[in-house]
Image 1: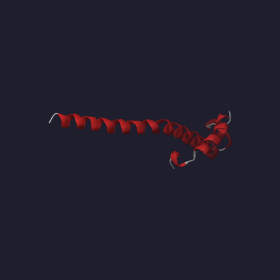
Image 2 (image 1 turned 120 degrees about the vertical axis):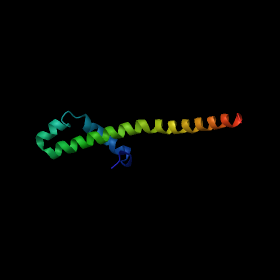
Image 3 (image 1 turned 90 degrees about the vertical axis):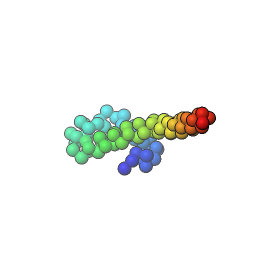
Image 4 (image 1 turned 135 degrees about the vertical axis):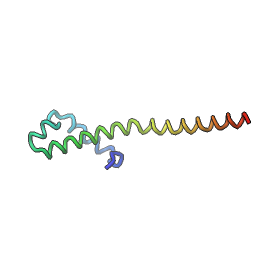
Length: 81
């Protein structure tokens, strides 16, 4: 599962739960190993989502800049021939 496949509103609904003091691996593992593992999965998917949404626009800008650079280099090389 990729965090990009999960609607942003789902992560918005999770934020209050993530802010709770007891929603962490240590506290949940006291209840059960499965609860601790699920808690950690949810926290990690949320972190991954946050990072990918921060990086995605930068990746797009990088691709556009590299394309423009390639065109500029090609135009400069063509003018020297």
